[in-house]
Every structure is written in structure tokens, then in C-alpha cells.
Length: 586
Image (tube, rainbow, N blue to C red; front, side, top):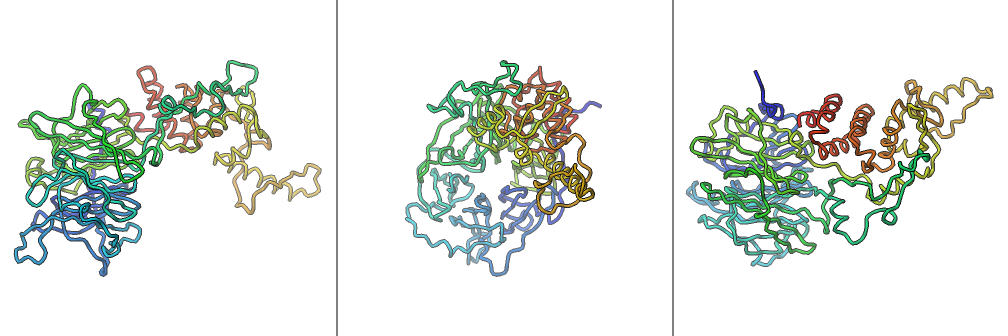
């Protein structure tokens, strides 16, 4: 029986622990390796709750977080918003039961901001937020609105009031000052039924593009600086700074490079209209809005998705939601490449073909998309009741589709280029790496010890053995000097025989060894040698064998970027050899 390759990308698991009951209008928020679920209305009792649950994304176990007796617990609510900031949950608004009403069915809408401290697991009392605010900036009470956090500010967008009237505005809350600081009209209807607003705690910087757009070069040294290669005998091996390729990397947002908020809406589901706008926070309380709807392209576009959820991962906007047509219904997942503005569909295979699936979220650290639901449920019936189930979770490997968070920069670009120059000019070289053809590359032993854990351990073992030998032969004229030995160290196994006091013999060709040393000196992959497909493959093997996780992440990142018909066979073979399943599937 033939299986779709897409079936390899998605698995389905039953959740365990304190599995929440079926809910309407609950919120889900990813923080680290946990999803926090808050509020909602119980389907069975038609009663709103203020319960808080944590779902472990690694073990798939639910935990109900019991409140402390003295805590000021928020009102029960549904169709509210929950965001994360500074290891806290931020709850805003929603619809609740009218307090002190004789009619338990009587409803009201809220405009309160509440904080839950994830470190202490306490609700922070509202009385702590006594900062005076202008009444004109406090948002009108609302539910089914959008929210997102960027630049230490909570953005509340749209939603509806008690009478289901659209509230066409954007309200901004200063999370540091605990005050509403801006309110701006917004000429579009936005709400959870048709829209998402998402940002990321990391942004992706693209050095090559920034260098082109910048008046000042980022290179270390003047343009055209040439670095000398250790082979010395071959001028063609010299590395020019202009030949270096600085690949995109992830970093925390700054005032100059804030985390943008992407607002995507789809409506008029019989003839779908799609809109995309980008909010960019400015250093003060203001922000700009850029229209990007017309830039979206692709051979296919997302259908109308109801109650969509979404996220930013790397340079991709992910949107998922319920697609309802007369003859076909499904939970549909789409992705917009923010560099090319091209749409494509994520096919999760058969895992979510049947059952009731509605709430999706991204685990950025693992590049995975989680969908909560019930694989025995009925999608149309549950959609009509707005019902959310938590009994099962489908897990999609997004990296297998080339969607992932690029690795961070360990060293800024001028320092990378300085490091490369230091290697090629033999600065502080007191050690050698001997290649399989007996060519030698001078390098710094201290630098290798600091940046290569395997080498550091081998050195300690070597020195331990030297110390042991010197103590057993105290009068020997062959006494070994061990003054460099670190303080008390545990007993080590026999050191690797390839290591001598001044050299390490690696059974690797010269180009591979040089590329590895270039990595240790720059903590990056930037040279034409390092980025050559055959060299990348060997670096992946070395990163796996020596457990250099950052190098492994960089190599996979470079391989994803360079993947083509001509490189795919080699990438597949080395990914299989090194157990890089996501890259192998792609």
C-alpha cells in the first residue's frame, strides 16, 4: 500500500492528565514548552469558567493549575484574548455573566487587563495597577477581538461590543507602565471569526539585504579586504570579504528592528476577500501600518477560513482554520512566505482528515504545529456549536516543509570577519590540526578548548594522564610539564590517541578541516568553502559525531536554503545518515 510522504510529517496522539472538558471560546497561549488554556464556556453546563490549564508539548499531558485561595481570580469569561509577555499571561476583555444578576443567563462584556505570573503561579491583584489613565484611552468593553504583544505593548484590535456592533479601533496598553497609551480608529472589521493578529518574540534579520540597503558597510575592514588562507602556497584559496555570505539569523527585536504584528483577515466566504496589514511599533507609543494585501501571490490562495488561528515562524506567516464548503469540510493550514509573499498549503496527510479539529498553535523551539481536537468528533457539528475539544493533538513537523526558526547569531558580523582574519593570519596560533593528507593548519588551542566541548574533554584527559605519569616517574628526565592543568578534575578515560601536546590528527581532508576551523573561529558558516554542498554534508557528519548542536543547526539551515534538484540526493543521503528526519523528509 502506498503512503503519502505527507503522512510522515504528522502524528496524532491522545492527550492525558487533567484533560479539559469541551469548551466554547477558550484561549490558548504558547509559552516555552507549554500551552496555557484559560476560560471558556462549558458545553455541558452552559457555564463560563476561569479555569487555567497547562499542556506539556513534550509529554502531551494536561495539568489543571489550582488557584491559590487568596488570589484575586479573574471573572469567568469566553471569547477573550490571552497573550504572553515577560513570563506572564495577559488576559483582556471577553464576555462574562453579569455579576449580581438574578438571571444567570444575563451577560456582560469586559475591558479589564489581568496578569498571571507563570513563575509564582499567582494571579497579580488588580489593585497593583493604580497608574492613572485618561478615560478617553480606556477601550470600550469587547469580546471576540484580536490581540498581540510587541515592543512591551499590548495591541487590542477590533472585536464587538455587547450589542454585536463592530468596534473599529486599535487600543495600545503599555505593559511596563500598566496604562492605556493610545487609541486609534481602524477602518476595518476585525474579529476572531475572520481574522488573526500575530507577532513573534524573535525576528529574522537578513544581513545581505541590510548590507545592500545600508550606506555603511558591515564588513570588517574596507571593501575588498582579502583574508589569507593557511595553505599559503595557493593564492586562489584567499578569502575575500566580498565573497562571504551572511545567511539570515534569528534575534530578539530592537527599537530599530521591532517585531511586526501581522493582521490577516478573510471574509465574504463565497467569494473570498483577503487582507494583510503589518503594524510596526515605533520607539514611542506610536506605530505604522503598511498595506500588504496586493503583494500576496501564488498559484493557489487560502480559502475562507473560519475562526482562524495563526503564528509567525521564521520568515513565514502560518494560518489555519475551518474550511466549510457544500461538499467538503476540513481543517486547513496555509503558509505565506514573507520574503516572496507567496502562499502555499501545508498538507498534514491523513492525520486530520477525519475528526473535529479547530485550535492550532506553533511551538517555535521545535518548529512544530499542534492542532487540538477529537479524532472521533464531527467537524461540522462541532463547528456549529463552536465547540473545542482537547482529547487529541495532531503534531505537524513544519521543518519538513522548510518552515523553521533560523538559528541565532553567536557572534556579530564584524567579529566573525575578524575571527576569520585571525585564523588566516595565524594570530595566537600555538597548536596544529593535521589533516589526512598530512597538511597542517595552525590554530589557537585555547579557542578550540572554549568552543569545542569534545576537544576540551580530550585535553583534560590528556593532561590527567600526563599528571599520572609524572607522579609515577618523579625523577624521570622525561618529566611532563602540567602547569596548565585546571583545578581538581575527575578521573578521565584514556585520551584519544589522535591528540598530542601540540597537534590533533583528524582523518578529514584539508578543505573539510579548514571549514570546521572557520566555524570555530567565526561560529558561523559564511565562506564559499563552508557553503559548498559537499563540504556542508561533511560538516553535518562532524556536527553529529562531535555533538556540536549549533553547527548542526547552521548546516541544516544552509542546506534548507540551498535545497534544489541538483543538491537533493546528497542532502537526503547525509540527512538520513545523521538522523535529521525533517531535512530528510523535505
